Each structure stands twice: as structure tokens, then as C-alpha cells.
Amino acid sequence: MKYINKSCLILISVVLLCSCGEKEKQEEKFIRPVKYEQVGFLGGEKVRSFSGTARTDKIITLSFRNTGIITEFNIKLGQKVKKGELLAKLDNVQSRLAYEQAVTQLNSAASQMNTSKLNLNRIRSLYEKGSSPLSDFEAAKNSFRTAQESYESTKRGVDIQQEQIRYGFLYAPEDGTIASVTAEIDENISIGQSVAVLNAGADMEISLGIPESVINGISPNMKVNIDFASLAEKSFLGEVTEVSPAADVNTATYPITVKISNPSNEIKSGMAANVTFDFGERNLKNKQLIVPTNAVGEDSNGRFVFVIEENGELKKVKKQQVTIGNLTTDGFEIKSGLSAGQKIATAGLQTLLDGQEVKLQ
Image (cartoon, rainbow, N blue to C red):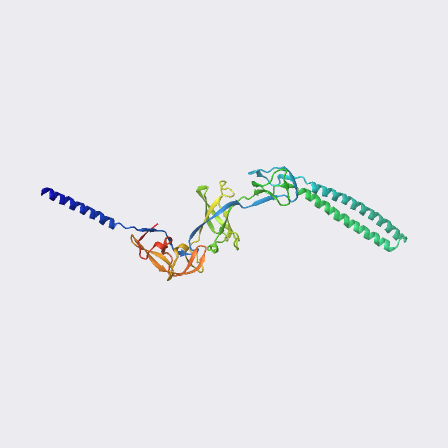
């Protein structure tokens, strides 16, 4: 009898433990994590950052104004050059030949002019003595005038050909540093072909593109903050100097230029920069609420989003019907159904249920 009572007690304990375990398992529930965003206005953020590229404020592409083969090339990458320094020259065969022909033509024109002048003097003398008619005298004057004009024209041609020879010499137009080299000695060069790029500016600037949603908030002399990924522990100040009134057809953004107010020798042309704009409390015209495209779903009742409602630690999603407007590069415009500052789910709309408890990611 004693053994039977012990067995019963053990059996009852096992049943109680199992039922408690099942109860604990039943109490555990899965809370779905969701990604979310806060509803805001198009371009209405106070602080926005955009990426750009550093460069000197004066970049000169070096090229010849003549054709020929490079016979001397004193250009190296990173080289410091002074204004007026000879950097390269061409063989100038064609230009020298043209110059020599122009000189020959000039000598011939000078000879013809002298002959015409002597003939004019002879005819004038005869005319004054009455031994020559007026028509001969006028013909001699016209002949001399034509020869003189021909001489002056040929003389200008010699000057032009001499200038063409000078175009075969490439001099540094400004003090600066060679940023790139695109030619070599013995290379055949055409007019205007780039042989090198000279960074001649004293100041550094950032070139970047701004989307249309915020371009109207940017104006010349606006102050900005600048950071470089390669100079992680340093920050710089800048000022907007140029704002394009038209969008770039390739990037669909508006090009602007920012001058670095406190440049450093560590900033190199071509470095990636991050420019931060503080728009403050701007009075934006035609404010539009914007939500990401992946936050908007559609059912038989129309378009909807899942609004996140918070009550202390408890967070639930509520299905909210919305009216959408145009599709922009930032998302859908919201005509009604939402207000700025609300939080909405941005992923997994197909698996969410109205009133479902969630946790924010």
C-alpha cells in the first residue's frame, strides 16, 4: 500500500510538471520585427548630406595649337611648373616649310613693289614733261598701289606663319602642378589634343549634384560643412559659390560648386567629399508628404499603409487607407490618410495583419 501511494505521488508530480511546461510554452508568443520610417515632407529635412569630388578651382588642359611629332617633352606627373616654363615642343616641319614659302613670296612681292615704284617715278617724270599721257600715269599709279597691297598682304602672311611655328612650343600658362599626362615623346599630335592637365588654382572646391527636391533651398554664399572619407578625423568649412539654373542631362541633378574656406595640403584633387547642408526652418512651397514606394500596398479597398501605434512598450500596426499622388524619385506623394511624424512599416506588408503586435527594427 505504501508503494502504491508513492507511485501515485510521483505520477501526479510528473503530470503537474508537464502541464506547467505546456502552459509556459503556450504563454510564449512570437512578436514580428518590422522595419519602419517616419513620414516626412519632400525635401523638408533640415540637414541633408550629398557626395561630391574635390578639385582645384582652376584646371587647365594643356594642348598644342599646331600639329606634328613631339620632339621634346618635359612633363611628369606631379611636377611643379612655373608660368612661362617650356614644357614640350613639336618638330614643326610643315610650319617651317610654310614660313619659308611665305618669306619667298614676301621677297618676290617686295621686288614687284620696287619695280612698280621705279616705273611710277619714270612715268611721272615723263608726264610732267608732257612726254607721257595721263592714262599711262594713272595706270602706273594703280600698278604701284596693287603691288604695295600685295606686299603688305604677303608680309602679314609671314607673320602668321611665324606665329604657327611658335604654336609648336608649349609653355606653362600658370604656376601649378601636373595632374595627369596623356602624351609621350615621339607621339604625333593634332591641334587641340590634350597632352596633360595642369592644376593651377590656389583654392580647393567641391563639385556635386543636388536633386530638384532641395535645389531651391541652396543659394550662393550658403555655409556648409565638409568631410572626407580619407581624412576621417578632420572636418572643413565651405561656402557655395556657384549654383546651376539647369539640371545636368546625364545625372538629372543640378551642379553646384562649394569652395573650401579652410583648405589643407592633405586635400587632393579627386578625393571623395561629403557636403552637409543645414536648411533650417525653410518655408517650402507646395509641401508634399512622401513615403517610400515599398511602404504602400494595395487591396480591394485601394492603397494602404501600416501605421505603427505605440502605447508604452506595446507596439501594433494599424492598416490605414491612403490617397497617393505622383511618384517621385523619393517615393509616393500622399494626398490624404497620413500626417508628418507618423511611423509606417516599410517591409513585409503582405504578411502583416491589422492590429498585429510588432517590434521595431
